[in-house]
Each structure stands twice: as C-alpha cells, then as structure tokens.
Image (cartoon, rainbow, N blue to C red; front, side, top):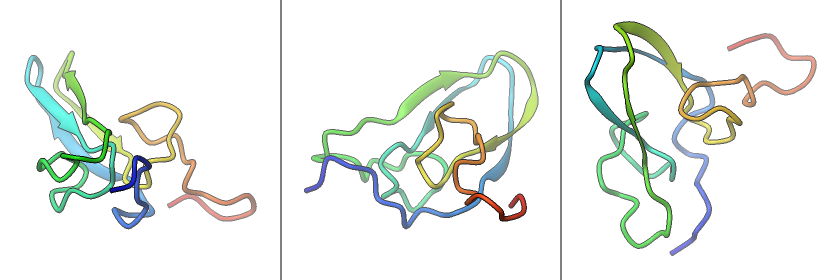
Length: 86
C-alpha cells in the first residue's frame, strides 16, 4: 500500500464545528470515507491521522485535498493559480 496521501478525498475544504476540549482525528491519508476525519482506513499505509484538541468552540475549514501546509486547516492549496476560491 502507498505511503503517500491519495487525493480522492476531495478538492475543497469541509466546514466543521469543533467543540472546546474535544479530541479530533483529521484524516491525513485521504482514504477515510468519513472525510475530513479518520475512520481507520490508513492502517498499513505508514500515514497516521493528525490528532488535535479544539482550543475553543469554532467553525474550521478542514482540508480534504491533503496538500495543506497548515494541517488540518485548509490553506487553499487546492486552488490553482488564477482560479477563484473554493
């Protein structure tokens, strides 16, 4: 199995509401059917989810293309130069 993220997870961020002090596991491999969160599909890939605790109640835009430089939050890496924001 590949040790690189797959890009079938999506090409635009997903807006999620996180709750203060809750623990979340963001899918880093792109294989989860529960995007943008991990469902265990990474087993055997060498990629692990990014586990984080919400510091406050908030709406976040989580990356699904797995190209963000600020995981788990989208940094618009999915936008190609000259395209509008998704």
